[in-house]
Length: 444
Image (cartoon, rainbow, N blue to C red; front, top):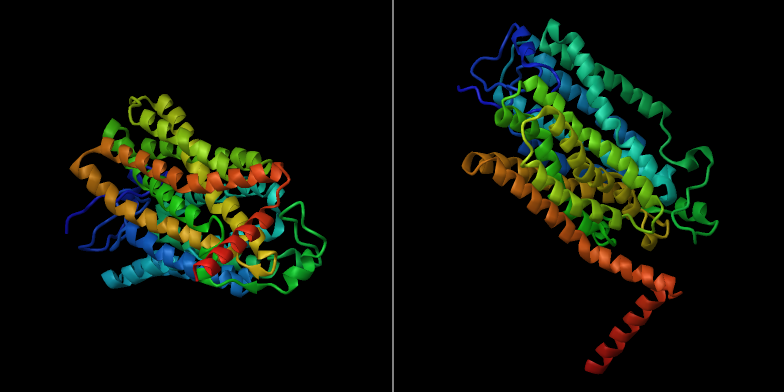
């Protein structure tokens, strides 16, 4: 079977591929991974299963203890990684359907983590500080990538299967730390919930004790959930396009060594981490995070166009990627963390319904659907038209993200104007409902 290149992020040079002593026969190999592993499915399939897992994990996180759901997801993910990379290599069992099942299961189990984590973080931090804190906290994924790369670099010379074994073992053991040490809610240690709005009275604890999980379809009807879900689907197509394909683009377009291309691509992540902190802190001072997100997206469309024309200079590319990451990955980090937490703590719920995990699962799951579509479209467009068309597609997706949020931005602006004039939004809504009832009676 022909050996095909599949884009995958790694900071290890390609010479580490030569260290493996055994290769599975007659199976496609990953050319950009730290080790040659079989891959019978695509990143698109992985994102599809991740979307399903996010939807399911979000619902489970509101119905059961998010600490327990997160621990189970961590344990199952560790087991799948151990079986995928270590057991199959030690036993010399290379079967396509086994790899396919493990790959799909890994995407399903790992995706459970994000909505439950956002649920726990949202329970501990209120609206006024959530943007800054979650902006800092969302960098945990990048820190984990760095730690995982260091561990892999240390053991890869013994065989790539040991990289899977060590990382999966650490992950499995840390599941016990989560299960026994993590507190999912302030009330577990007798503390009050953080206030979401300045007008909240002191009966928040009483409301939270009678909370019940929200239905999946009802969660879609909460204000802002549908616009942000479809917006994130467009934006995640861009961020995951950069994540999977940027090193391949830098290597093929500029002819740089693959190790250098991988290292350069990390500047995109750096920009996103900084933007999540800055944007989150700025949005904490506003009544809504939508204006900050929209402004960053408008600037992002111009940055993408400029980056597509950047010459093959390492320093210029590093600076340009940091700027692009700031305005593209920054809003994506905000939507998947602080914005999702805000939507799950909407005023309409009044603290009587648990919706944080479900809403986060909906937003991020819909985003994964967009990412899966992007994983299919990007290679087809690149082969047929070229990299310029791929960047034009990224620009269109960012514009689409902005368009999804414009109606919500307009509505929030109207609510802000009413509040400055001393008009209660609930009274306006009740009056509108009464007028509709009178018109319906007149027609009848």
